Image (cartoon, rainbow, N blue to C red; front, side, top):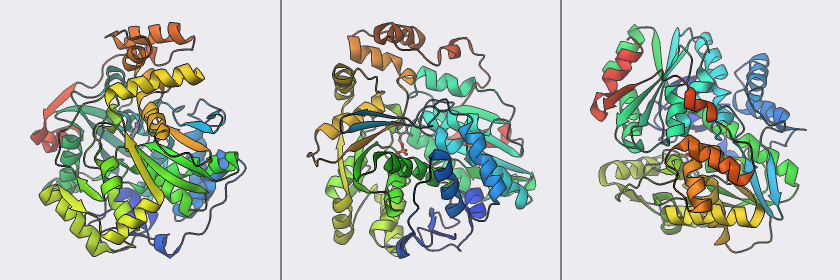
Length: 476
Ligand SMILES: *Cc1c(COP(=O)(O)O)cnc(C)c1O
């Protein structure tokens, strides 16, 4: 499998190179060269594991089979649920619980796997150290740290917004053990963190300095093919379990998870509608409805912090798909976004999007009402992100098909919001809120051990001091 850039000005590479580069040298995102020629269907295997093995064989075919198998085994060993991603079904509404990995959010699916692939990629390319830089709105950071901790030849530095993550999310990062993983707060929001990390990758002096120190700067954000493609697995596995055509609703931020569903449908999973669920930062919701991506708007800190994003990286891959690989057009649109803060889809591309995509959004208040409504209706605890998915689903026309809502995080990551939603009571201390939530719901709490965990990473930097933090942390 060869990967080309969405901007059309970088050489085709194999998966090992795409994994290590993260982003293509022309600034674009890697996408399989065969994408538009039609991907061969990828039938589900007997279970999640065999589907994942088949998926890796397809997308990472230059990595030896034993390395891939070891990666899958090591990844799945870290999941608490026997079927990895349980499906909780209430009539035609299904919650696909993607959060039974080490950090209780869906990002664990790819991030328990990717480090093993990267370790191999570095070895085969003779790279001493892969230094992974990641911007996080809350969940990617801890998942990257947990995934890479102890993986030889790799190091991780995570930048997270100083305000915006929950206390539990913050502790999952700052208390994460492992000599080779680091977290640093940035005085700004997620978009600031993401922009700073992107700038670091484009910083030639910094990259040269890293190279001289035997280190390759790479990324574990969902721009990396090692993040995006493993996520396809659970949609294909879901198709096996449902056995009939279905729609998906995906709480969306950086557009990675829903794009994985889009790829799953191109690989033969009978997914009909793809429904984007946004929070108050509803730039993608509006994009789906109006065909114009306009990031010139106020940024809100919400109670679904992992979706507090205005510049959504993976939209670039969607633009490539919607324009039938018109890389000049993609470049123009991304340029427009950079210089004016907005771009519009060509009419045909907008029509193509309307055929597959729908969207909706929820305010923080509506998010809490949805948590409450889901509990009242099904006696089910849905985290704020997942609850937005359910709320958006209620506004969609009933197609009669089953609908799978991506359950992107565990409710135990956001106990304060859960309690306020369910009881009206605001318990500011997150751990006290978790205990109250356990008492309220009768369910077993999780993540309480973070209360006593030792803080290991306390760096804070201004948003223009990120390069210095990188040099310091990786000792470049
Ligand atoms: C990351 C995340 C999202 C957004 O996923 P994208 O792939 O960035 O669209 C939604 N919910 C939760 C809980 C997340 O951690």
